[in-house]
Length: 489
Ligand SMILES: [Zn+2]
Image (cartoon, rainbow, N blue to C red; front, side, top):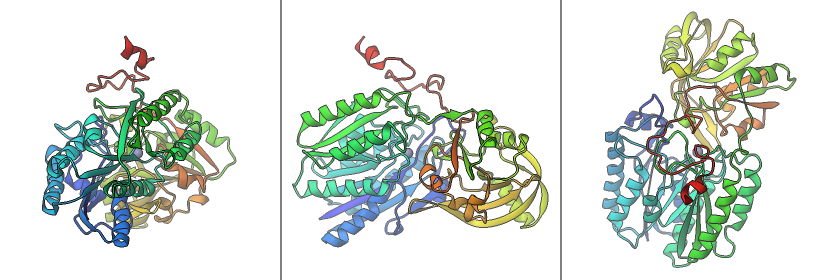
């Protein structure tokens, strides 16, 4: 038995001022065949899980390229076609194969390609023919298109947001593909379109028990897999929005019924799943009145994980204006300022302009006399078991004593190790300012005295009603109050 696997992944914010090319993939993660590390990355757990099964069961795993770019702006056409053709060439060389297993994100948009993953999967189908099994994992912050559903046999998305279950998801894809190959199951999929776009964290109710119930369905009564696509509101594509995909063992009616039931329930959660997001002023009021320590204030929209640059200064400036001193910021993306700090050296005191450079939405740059407290080449943070590179970093100390980590590789704030790796004990600070919508939650909740979500009106297209989608043609809540009535009429 021969199985080919590959992973091309990024999440494209089509509204971002950034653009994505091959250097962004190289900077985040690029592993040519055979060079995938022992630990999985968010979208490539199918590699590590397939290795375990291949070694145990004695079949051949042919590894193609695995690559990931930090979420950003539109991918340039040459880069997408180059990566796609690289993987298709590896697949052709590996033929004949019994199955293809992919680790995809599902929200990649390139110049001329609104559905990169659909394009990739359908080209793979054209190479392998109708009988070879194709399985893929997706991130729920993706777009589920008919092209993907009709060309892949197995589709499983992470159920948790934060995505703490990316390894289990990779394992499920590999397992379902192997069981299909052995004739143990005959997967049949059904999709329900929820016609909504919402932030759906599973770390809190009502999503928590909803996901637990969905998980309990799996493996019982012929239900093979239940996945929820949350959608990604910063991607202007026709299939934007939440969908449910259910796979049963050769039971199309059951797949359809469960998808519809769960999809209608999910639609009922619209408007009630978000944590309360405070304005910067209200957030700082609450933080100043609190005895907790440390208080984690997360800038939910200036989150590089959503494809924005991550160099907003708006919240930091507000904190400085309020006179806060005992804080650390992790991080502000500013490779130019990092370069200057490295040249100045640890201990140097210099006037520095940092942050707010990528566009008007990021706020104005901050000018301050700073002390370079620490320099670290190639710093990093954990995200679960995986290592996320932050590039060359500098800690600068502001005149009031506040500390700011400047990074060169864009990344959202996943884990307190981003502070400790830069010599800052996160528990010793009264306030920690981070940039993440919800992925930070699992790791930071372990050390946080209090968590405050801050809604800074900034670079992210956070209001579907005013985002001005050009490619979206389906009725979608909250743009339309009752999308199902709109469809019926
Ligand atoms: Zn995601």
